[in-house]
Image (cartoon, rainbow, N blue to C red; front, side, top):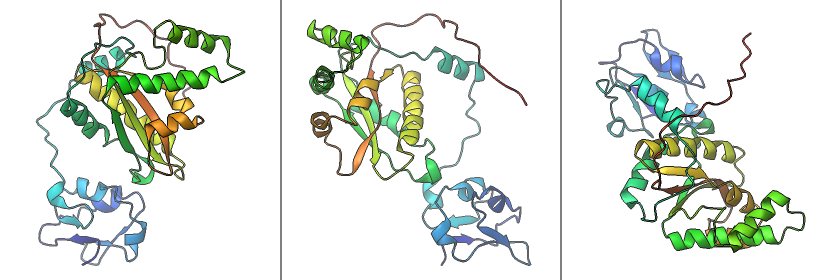
Length: 267
């Protein structure tokens, strides 16, 4: 048995699997059936296009079992106006309710976000959820400690240190939770993969009534400040690819303020 097998009793000979394969691993035999190319096992990166496209479920991929590939329910309709409004009304939330979110709700949102695309389907990301609000505040304090030690700290960031000393939290905004994605240091696309995954996460979170905000200070300081790296406790050889504050919004926004028109050049 090879990596990919074709059931000739159900295959429609439509060539769809070959058409959508990103690396062209399918040939056609004299009878019109697709044939997975010899040696393709080392080249295939398990994107699943061939499994997803086959209308007759004639294709079996050893690493992507058909039984675990759920059918798309075409009766579920996405309202484009509702989707557009969700994306346009999503805001960076910096005021959170104090009560924590159910772990099951956060996990459900990660389950949606993990389908985000990654370069060559590497799927290198791991997720870290800081559930304890006190621990989130400790991490924010470590970021402030790093800022204090920066002799060349710009004035606008020095103001954030002063805010912290006055009992405010300009770093993680007293969010009850922090969601971090991390990946291997030797993966060149970690930042891009992390940004895509967390963008998908924040839309899925907004659809479920939760609020998010990008934790830019923590993301930056985590690259250079060993005490924060130690506190995060990531696996050896892993670094932060992105992070979001997470919680239930304290306030509900009512309008969608305008933004600058898109700068588009048509050629």
